[in-house]
Length: 427
Image 1 (tube, one colour):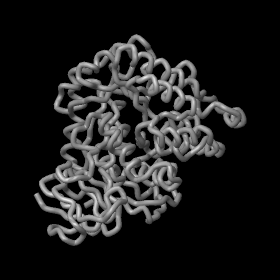
Image 2 (cartoon, helix red, strand yellow; image 1 turned 45 degrees about the vertical axis):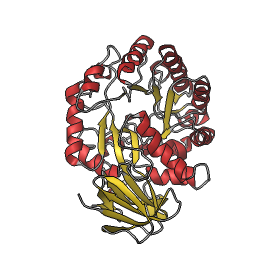
Image 3 (tube, one colour; image 1 turned 180 degrees about the vertical axis):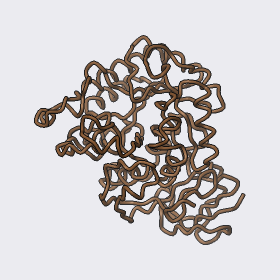
């Protein structure tokens, strides 16, 4: 394999080095200008471990009109990711060893990022009986994260059984916290604005009640629970209480819930229709503080591509979801680093280290030191760019940031020691 020298780069924004990569690993951090090999000029740029996304919808198999493993991998690489977890709500659902292995093998052939399939908790996401959790864990895909995302595992007995089952192989249940009876026909955050707009409200308690139940279940059976896309201040308080009690729970927040609020829904633009819904300014502030203090462990994109016809329609008929992979770093920079809530090591921890640990991904999220796997993201925090929906690598165009100018840019990415992105374009 080729020997690459990332010249003059600053790991975690610290002193400049030549980051030397060979054989898929970092072999040396040498004084700037001293190392030899194929040069990647990164003078003054910042090196971070490649980002790991715990929550990506790649849509394949079944909805290749919205996204494929290949197009999603392209978007991920351009966004600085070297690993993504592909959610199970495909068609057919990823509830068997055969389907997760298919997704895993396609990801391997594409070779731009590590595609880690997420297995369904229940057969067909129907919430009636457990899927083949053990078989998916023992498959070549080695599934460790299981989720019915898009639907909540609302039956407490079934949730308990799932938590107990995955203990055998150190798996984790990633819960989409949404009490279905409290959110029937819900369209946006419940509050004054939903009443003004005449849209059925989505109460915060529908999320918070499920999280409260599930942390107690996880404590009862001594298993691992992960909470997907936390969106309310009340959820933060439940998580803070649970962690203080020593319960083995982790949580993620999306970039859009760190930045966008329910006020954007006032124009009835379906681009802002998402599950869980955009919340209030107070919720956004609480989520940022929780991510900063570690109550929320990770930033996860919930990248949810949809074809044009599923978003360019009236609000009630539109699909829930937003693109997230190519904009995640910039939104994290804007909301967490620039205000001083996280430094570069903190950002690496929330976008790489902890997500890799939660997903049990062995060669991701490592410290940038000699001997570590060479999954590396290089960023330019001084750059700005204007989001062009038509230029996204995804097959879909449903970004809420279209025409917005965002800070920071991913310039280079190395995946297993090989460049996937050079100067902001796919290598």
